[in-house]
Image (cartoon, rainbow, N blue to C red; front, side):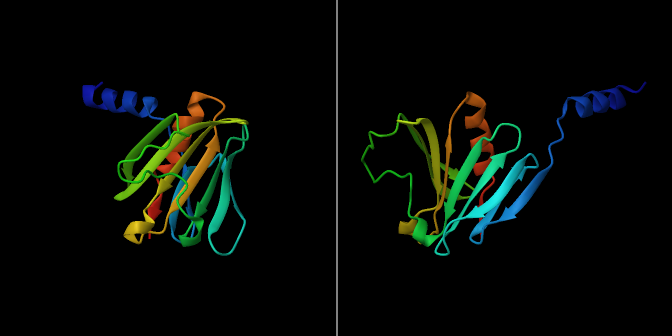
Length: 148
């Protein structure tokens, strides 16, 4: 057997095929694996909703639009002590902040994409963390957000 064909077969067998759906959230889009259920909730002044994994109920809540405010951000030169972990990064070319905090209900991860000071509609995401894989899944889904 040709070695390049063998290499392709091995690579194909090691690659997990995950199908994803793209959801329109008015100000942008979010991609999530097919094992998540999308539901719109909340108000008309922002786009609120949830993405819930069918297998275990892991839920990412989101609130997107001008009236949603910015859940996670740091003012220049300031620290916010409520976060046990806080980082600024970039998602799809927009500034983003991700923080982990401990609440009476347990650990929670939150991200905000966009900056109202730059006239960008913010997109806020939050989820309760039960296990480390929840952090990874949260970041993978939030990382797909694309503003229009």
